[in-house]
Length: 446
Image (cartoon, rainbow, N blue to C red; front, side, top):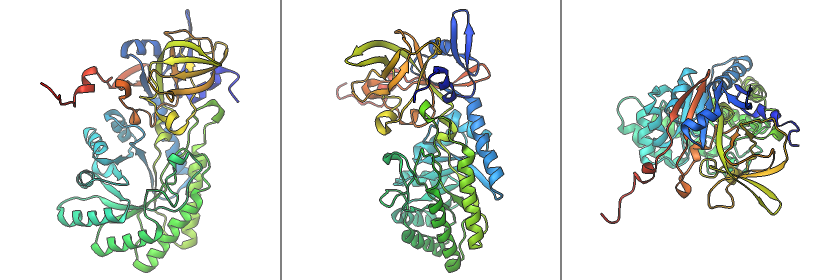
C-alpha cells in the first residue's frame, strides 16, 4: 500500500537525509547540503552520493560477517553497479576488493591506483584484450567456460612475471526469486560451468600447474529470500569434497556472489536485513564444511547495489505538468537515458519534491522523461502533491545500475555526480558537454 505519510519515504533516502525548516518552508537536505543550491550549481539531472550511507553500508556487511563467520572473510564491490575514479578510491578506504568486467573497468581501477591484489575480474565472454588486461592488472581472474580456460593456459605459459590467481564460476542450476533478466545461476544461464565441466576444468588447471584458488557462483541479483542459496552452497561443497578426495585440491576462497536486495519503493519497506542474508550464508557454509570435514574457506561476498543503491539520489527538474486521459503526467528533464531500469526490469521507484516534501498528496502521478519513447516512464501511479513546473523532484535509491547503464539517447548528456559529506559537496564526475557527444566522430566530408 502507498505510504499514508509522504515522509515515510525518507526511509528510502540516504541516512543523512533531513527535512529542514526554513522561513520559506521545509526543504529536503542530504548530508547537510542544500539540494536546490546543488541543482543550481551543477544542473539537472544531478546524481548525489551520500558518503555516510556508503560507509554505513560497508560497516553493516563487515559487522554481520564478523559476527556470523569465524573464518577469514571479505567484501568485493561490484564495479558494474557504478564505478568512477572517486568510487574506486572510496573502496580502498574500506579495504574492499573491486570486481571489474573487461578492460574498461580495469582501466578505471588503474586510474584510481587500486592495488593488484584488490582487483577481481569477472566476465562471460572476455575478449583477448580483456584477458591481457586482467593478466597484467588483476589479483584474481574468474574463468567462465572451457574455451576461456584454454586461452588462459596459453597466456600463463607465455607470460613471465606476476599473474592472477584463478577462480572458476560454477553454474549450480538454481536461481533466486528475481526478475528473469537478473537470474544468473539457472541451468540455461549463459554464465559459468556446470558440475561436469567444472570437474574437467579443475583437473586441467592442476595438470598445467595453474594457480587455481577459488570457486565462485552467483544465482541472481536483487532478491530478498536467501533460501535458494542453500542448495547452491551444498552443490559447491559436494564438489569441493569430491575434488579433495580425487585430486587433493581445496579452494582457498568460496564466493557465493551477491545480489541481496534493497527497497526501491515504500511498498517494499522495511529494508531487507543484511544480517539475515549474511547469517544464512555463513550458517550453511559452516554446517556444510563440518558435515564434510572440510576446512572453512575464506568467505568472499560481492555486494553491489547493497553498498551503493541507497546512497544515491537523482535530482530532476519538473518541466511540464499535463493531463492525459486519466493520468497526471509530471515530465522531468531526465529518465530513460540516465535510468533504464524501469524499462528493463519494471523496477518501481518512489520520489519526493524537494520543496515542502510533506505537503498533502493530491492523487497519483506518472513521472516521465523527455525522450521519444513511450517506455520513458520512471515511476507509475505514485501519490504526489500538486507540483509546479520548475520544482525539483528527488528520486531515492538511485546509486546502483543507473549511471553505469546510462546512454546518450536523443543526444542526452550524462549527468554530473557529486559526493556529499558533512555539509560539503565534491564533484566526482562532471556533466558531459555537447562536444563530448561528437568527440569520437569522424566526418564524412571535410
